[in-house]
Length: 61
Image 1: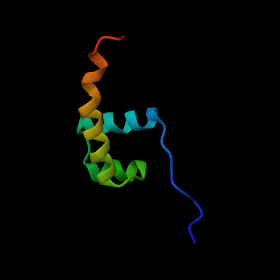
Image 2: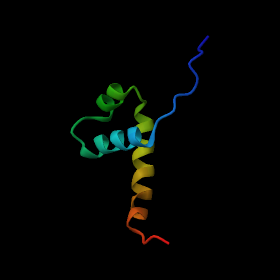
Image 3: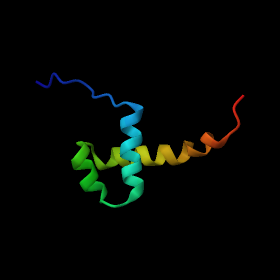
Image 4: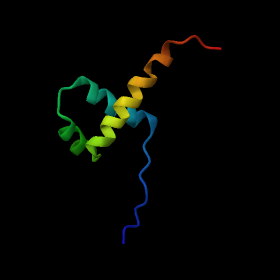
């Protein structure tokens, strides 16, 4: 029986992984092996990052 539970990732870790994916130096398979993630997780994180990236440049307030 698996007693590990669900893994939780910090925003810093997610950013590090997404930036690695965006660099496109390695394949998704290679990056997913390196970080022990499924390639679909990388694709989902990349999609979410790109969809919300424009909000960084919105004025505060």
